[in-house]
View 1 (cartoon, rainbow, N blue to C red):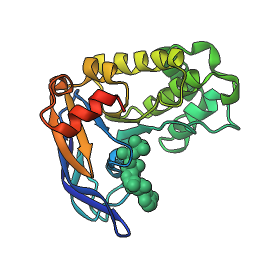
View 2 (cartoon, rainbow, N blue to C red):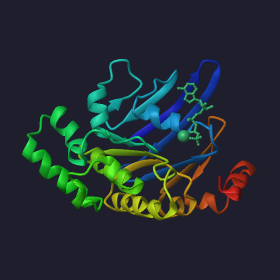
View 3 (cartoon, protein in one colour):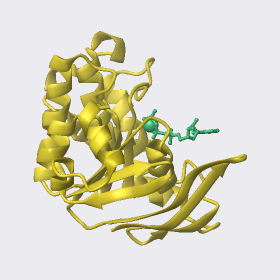
View 4 (cartoon, rainbow, N blue to C red):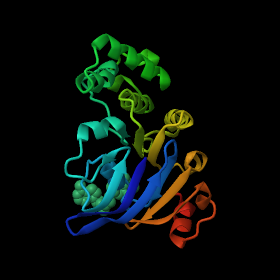
Length: 239
Ligand code: ATP
Ligand code: MG
C-alpha cells in the first residue's frame, strides 16, 4: 500500500535520502527510527508529497506520488499526517478544526460534519472538547484532536512524525494509546518515534535510517538484536 523504491532527495548539495526503499503492507505499522538528521521526517514528507523527490519511485494506494501530475487532493485524502506540534488551527474550535476539510474538500454538510467530529473525538477520548479552542487543551489532548482531525478524512494511511516528543511523559501515554488502538483497528501507518518500548510493541517492521539510507530493517526484534554497530549504538543510547 506504501512503496518507496530507491528514493533520492537532496536539499542543495546536502544528500538527505540516498536510495531509500521500503514497503508497508495494508494494515501494517512501520516504525522509522534513526539519529537526528538521518532523513526520517524528509522520508515521511515525501510520502505525502510535501517534498518532491529527485529520483526513484513512491507509490501510495493507487497514487504515483512522484509523478508530476499526481492528484494532491486525492493523495492527501488517503494519507493523513500528524507532526510533533502546531497541528491545530488556534483560532478555530476543535469541532471547526475537524470539520474544515470534510466540509471544504469533501463537500460534507455542516450537521453531518458535526456528527463526524463527535464520532472522531469519541475515538480519541475527547468527546467533551468539541467546542473548546486548542489553547484550552493539554498538549496530549491537542495531539489526540489532531489525530481525530486526520481520521475525519478517512485516510487509508496515517503518518506520524514524533507526535509525542513535545509532550510530558504522562501525556505521551494517552497519545500512544490512541495510536495503538488505531493500529489494532487495522490502520496502515508509518511512524517516526523515539519511544523504543512502544515501537517494539507496535511495529510490524522497523526501519533504521542512517545517513539517508536504510541501514538496517526487519521485525521489531532488530531492536533487541541489532546487526550493525550503528543500530546497536542507537538503541544503546536510546536517542
Ligand atoms: P530529527 O530526528 O531531528 O527530526 P530527521 O531524521 O527527521 O531528524 P530530517 O528532518 O529528515 O531529519 O532532515 C534531514 C536533513 O535534511 C537534515 O540535515 C536537515 O537539516 C535537512 N533538511 C530537512 N529539511 C530541509 C529543507 N527544507 N531545506 C534544507 N535542508 C533540509
Ligand atoms: Mg524529524
